[in-house]
Image 1: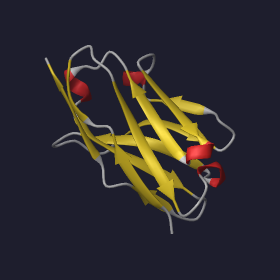
Image 2: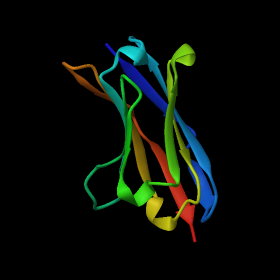
Image 3: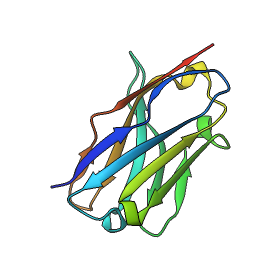
Length: 116
């Protein structure tokens, strides 16, 4: 059983930065097929923000390319999302996700609010 716990969300002004963390337990993040960040704004479907594969390849939504960076620390079993140049449209609940090849796991989400 994998557990994912996000932290680092909050209120920030437009142009500011935040770093989200996702602490995993139950399995090494190195053994996940993929890990990623999704977000969901009110009234919108959940969307992929960024993900990283087991071999370290990354993929980003067009809307965050050049502003967000996904990374991981195997020794801390933690996934990160560095968010720079934040915009009001980045406001959403951000969820950590992992796929083991057989199962999908989700964190409880962390709220990010960007004020204009």
